[in-house]
Image 1 (tube, rainbow, N blue to C red):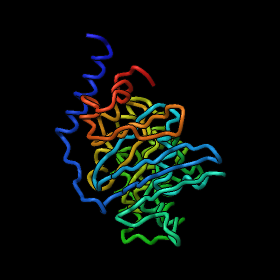
Image 2 (spheres, helix red, strand yellow; image 1 turned 90 degrees about the vertical axis):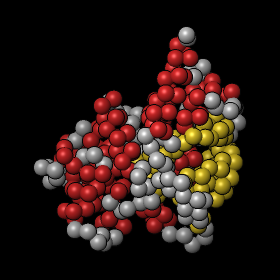
Image 3 (cartoon, one colour; image 1 turned 90 degrees about the horizontal axis):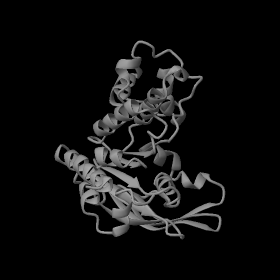
Length: 284
């Protein structure tokens, strides 16, 4: 058997095992996040063309594909971070619980509280303590939590898989944490404002294998209560953590979504030959 076939079979087995042990959400459309006909530009460069995807509440969706195919651009349209970039423009609709987040008069700050973001490189505030980092989103948004700060700290750090490692040094500066711990701290910071959706743009690309597995365990726990969308170049990771996988590709033009489906099917019997070539390692 060729190494390519072995690799594909291995991914399929991992995805099948994940599917067998997971009960993803089955919320109807109108509950969760929906992207409708998304186009994105940087100046005159058409980066993304006509992408429509549904993300039901309580599911994990992995976005895969080679570099430059629009995955990160797409994920940034989902909480209006794309518009931060000079010359950026977009068309289409992004619906959160049935309401378009791009509708005129929408409070963008409130949208970003409901649709949180974890970036490729951990970005804790180095001058703040671990505890201050977790609560910083609440302070910046001027939100008053119904829970006491100590209780909220423990809850968010527990959910992000970090509590046992930092509970005795909450007053220490966040810059003293390892890269993997800093990434989980950033997840805890996102959780403090109680988002409905968590976007993760290659959150493990700069981490060692042990830290990567801890982040994946965290994703599995968080997916019980929220919608998660993760951009990843790691096919094993997509197979381990996601319920659904969407394959993006740019064939010399704008990035497009080629295919989407249950992760187990995407890695065992994709409908498009380009998807099969990518997940089997024949290109990309």
